[in-house]
Image (cartoon, rainbow, N blue to C red; front, side, top):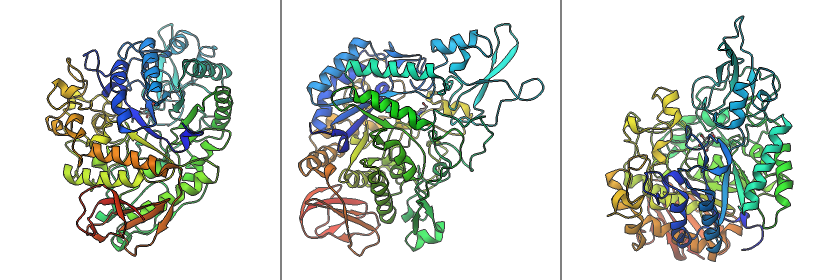
Length: 590
Ligand code: NOJ
């Protein structure tokens, strides 16, 4: 593989519990991944990123880690991990694992020791324990709220049975935050990094990479209205994006990188968006504090000791984009997820702005831009891009939600959006199942839901289970081939038989074929390493660009537009003679 592989790579996210279940217990596992690596090689991805498979009580689907250096029995053993890694490498696929440094599980031995120890002890100093406010100490130390809803503090019972101190958890109460000003914590994570690097992993996706340092004194803070992104900055949450009613449908564009000049009327006139280029944060005392960056400089130096270009990829929900770019300065991480892109509606003007802002912001620090449309925290883009009512990120969709699109409309638009993304220069992330055109599962029964968001908001927010339903592999097999026996941990909809991988594999018009063709052409034409030049086609609904010898034309409007001359290399949907239908993207050789 070429040097600096990560600048152009297509990285496929595996959510292990929902990928493939080899032992038939209803939960995906590492052996299931190994068994399907051939499918991913056939798809044409360069690397996989695995969401957590470590020892965990699974209160947040494994993002609550009890032992960072072992595999949870649900997923297998370290030997299964080694076998998976070796097989992936044999197939030319790199492997990135998830690192969760902001918080551990409450079952981590350090947290258990902290609970057993006294206030002021070294054991408590690894986490953020504080005395409560009020005369009896029965009010939380500050007013922070958990990303999943409810207070960010939980009070413990001291060893003598009396109500005691409080500990901070920006997420679920089962996920206590570490105190990253404590050198012992830093040293422990160096050990964890080395443990996985020594095993041969190619890098780490770093969870909540913007959250590990909190402002001195933990001051009170009230975020702007509407919460819910995965540890997001206020501006992200306040947008209509995430369920973004497309600007073409008349709602505000609302991606985090933008200020919308005047919501509805501007949208009706064709959307006016001004990129915000300020470097100011939103002021949250727990997101994006300057102190996080020295941690990544330290980690980068550690990774650079290893051969083979191991990488760090930041999950940093901050905005605007120039602020995200701080995570990928030359001596810090290699990549940062581009959530501004993910949150952009399917609208030509908005896409042009976010692409320009991304290339400028990341380019300014010498980093590649990344592109992403789906992951395990957001509504799948086969649904999200066509939702017609605001749906803040993290809230999810369920039977009470409004503005849900028909499947056919949603997947048609999603295919066009993916074809646009995969032609952009830089590195793209795919989320398992999007290559099958899977939609969000809206009608999960209440008693099947497992996301802590659902419980912490008493069902007010559906949360993220709808994008986490186990994959369909074979239309005619039990559990659609996800596992030969057992009951999948989330129920698969009956209608998914027609989306199973084996049904799509030999159908040239399938979504799977589109992804496979796009990835092959992307490689053949070196699009990831290319550059972008916008083309003016004089149609407000069209975003068109040249990347090397490929011209990409996306029609985000509701009417067909003329297709420029050229040989069609790829089309996200059927073309109509010389015209490009609504919600369709074509790649042309010109
Ligand atoms: C971001 C992860 O992607 C999400 O799934 C998780 O719940 C939070 N971080 C907390 O770890």
